[in-house]
Length: 183
Image 1: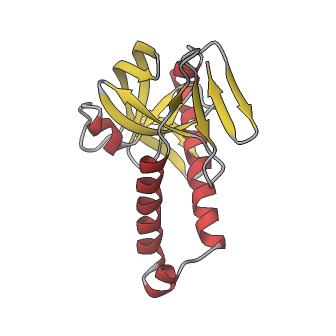
Image 2: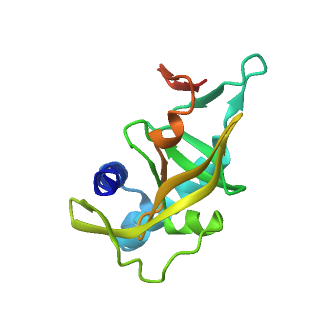
């Protein structure tokens, strides 16, 4: 069962990375032409991630405590989630069964990981995906929190995913146009 959960995480993670790379390759920037392609993509991804982190905090309604998230330009929904008391910017992935953290976000959340992360936690398009299984003390988004959730820390990648192991705690997750509402 853990292998299946890890495979779902990895598949969603790889699909997100492929989509991000495809969007960069179809619209090159002047920096891409001037610098090496790998360097420019890494800088673009870092700049984009910083911009998303700064721009998309959940908005809470006073009446019912719901959370409204606006769709970003890349077509995804993001939220600042508190993991073990620390803010982590995550992609809301309704197709993922669990939580996948980047190595950097795991550190931000106070999770210790191995240097090598040699455990195989799934398989992606390029073969084995390495990482570690962890247990999160607390995950919070808006008025909802959960304790003791399982997660995977991936050895590579920059974007963390928030999947159904947490989202299923809400009574509803609705997408209405360019807005996702969690109740």
